[in-house]
Length: 311
Image (cartoon, rainbow, N blue to C red; front, side, top):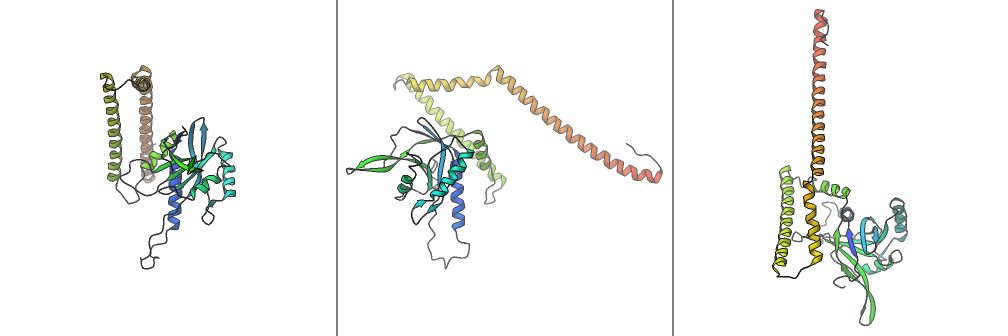
């Protein structure tokens, strides 16, 4: 397996794909685990984690490959192949819902590429002549900062005078849309299954915000020091980088424009108006309940004394 790809493709991976693969693996693993208390004396070794398989779908625009979604596939371990009829059926169903999406490759779980993976990869080449292989490592590594997701391409290399198809690693970036950002934020704020308190969740949330701000600050410092070194002449000038920095800086004054202030004040006033209306509605409802109770009590008293109701 080569170290890096030379195809020049740019891969964009959406969080939905990672969530789908993780959910697929979690469900299969929970179903494969024996019930508690069924182990024979505790001497048997722990079972190997299962592998799950599926297809990744998305769009390729020129040299940019954007992976939007994925779906599960059935795997036959005896023949080390995928259920082709199931794959074609799922492809037809997804084509009706997402007509612009195409099968870009497949996914699996594990710590590294296995020998049988190339057989599956070659079997999908009649659907996509150059499929991608997304592998997710489900093992927990607290010291790892990057996502446990790796994307591989296949390239034809000559090894010992024999042309062979091998996997090569490709770099990727995370691309999100508004719906995915809301979903990921919702998942991040879910209560932990170990019964953690609200204070624990708040501490974890604030720690994440602190880490993000700290990372942003460190990257700004690196950029600032780099520009200072370029200004002093310690390193050569790079026009492409300066254009990117200039484009980034031109966005900052936009939040101080008159249009932004007008839009912000309008949004702020609308929010206050809705809050005031909600308070008035709540007060009216409380007053209505109080009048009903007063009329009920006064009506009982008037029947005894011959008086009329208050309202």
